[in-house]
Image 1 (cartoon, one colour):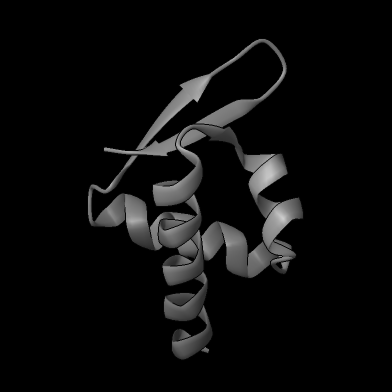
Image 2 (cartoon, rainbow, N blue to C red):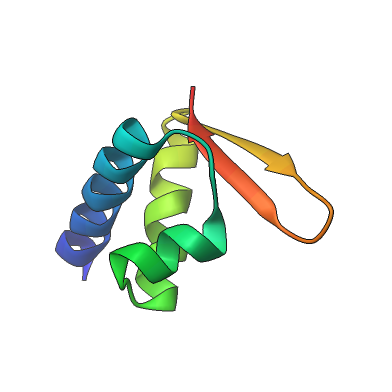
Length: 65
């Protein structure tokens, strides 16, 4: 399971390095990640202080620091 979380974190990191700031929902949809692994991957990257979150009107966006 930890391997899948690390893989998801890697996919998220690469996606954000190419796309910049995006909504979390769009990122999940574009990457076709399982909801749980997407959130665990985001948590992994957050713990490493690699992400910055912003609350928008109806969504939350994320980008690399």
